[in-house]
Structures are given as C-alpha cells and as structure tokens.
Length: 224
Picture 1 (cartoon, rainbow, N blue to C red):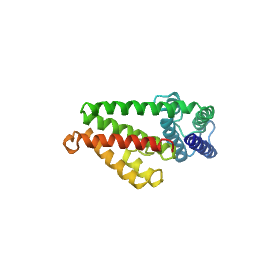
Picture 2 (picture 1 turned 180 degrees about the vertical axis):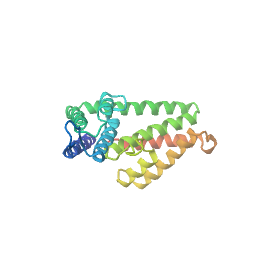
Picture 3 (picture 1 turned 135 degrees about the vertical axis):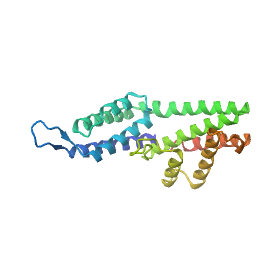
Picture 4 (picture 1 turned 90 degrees about the vertical axis):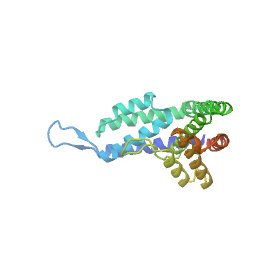
C-alpha cells in the first residue's frame, strides 16, 4: 500500500537521524566520565520517533511505552536502543503486521463511531453526534499528517498539534485542495460549538450534512 511505503521511508529517515546523533558522540576528559551526544539532534530524534510510533500504534502499545521509557538521555546508549525499536517497527511493516494495526483497525473504529453518530442523529441528538463526527475527522487528519511525514506533536511543548494546524499543513502539502481545507475548517468549527455548549448556533440539518460530507471526505482520502 502507498501509505505503508511512506511509513517505511519515514522510519528509514529516523534511523539515519539516529546514526547522525551517535556520530556526535563526545567523551569526557576525566576517567570514567560518561559519553554524550548532541542534545539538539537527540531530542529531535526522540520527539519525531514518538510522534511516528503514536500515529502507528497509539499511546498504549509496547513500542510507544518502551521508547518513551528508555530513550530519555542524550547519550549514545539511549540512542542505540531507540534505533533498535525503530528497526523492530520497520520489520513489522515488512511482514505486513502494520496493515492490521493501523489500517484495518482504524477503519473499523471510524466506521463504528460514524454509525453511532448516525444513530444519534436519527434520534435527534445533534450535539453529541457533532462532537463524535468531529473527533473522527480530527483523528483522520492526524493519520493523514503522519502518512505525509508531517509532525503531529509540538517538539517544544510535547503536546499534540490541534486539528486546525494539521488542516493547514495538509492543505499546504497538497494532500487535498483549498475547497477541502475550507470545508474542514467549517466542520471543525461546528464540532467546537457543540463541544462548548453553543447548541443554538447550528441545527440538525447542518450536522446531518457534516456527517455525509465527513464520511465522503474520509473515504476519498483514506488511501492517500
């Protein structure tokens, strides 16, 4: 699949980055002094790797937890262990395991949530339906971003970028056109109104249209 090739390419880039980090190794002048590496390159490697693993497996997977726990210090040993984890992930992609974890499962989850939103709309519960549809959309944007090598976590704050930022970056990268970008902005705005209790600022028909449009958008862009 096209997206798997992009993931493999990104992992290869991070492994190369790990090698660059290790090449900056410096040893203290005194006997027994620990070795260290460039802290700037190391934390670029750490943050980018965590962002990738989070996108592929989620925050509860052993790969994410292991990387987060043992790749903490700007030293050669931690960098080597992180590189080893990335090689394991690369191996899983080669064997086709990622399709099950990232593509099929995510697609099923999206489908389940959209079905729930559709049921809520049929029962005239427009507000929780709008929040649910918006959450599915935001997760889809995050996956699209990772598939294109766009960072989803701020390297400074260590917090996930908001959906509006991802929408802008995806549009800049020509993952979809300006019309899609404008539509997504509108859908996210409606979701935010629902999440903040501004229920009188939109109606049932608008949420139903959002449901149809977001479903079409996800189906159209899932293979990108």
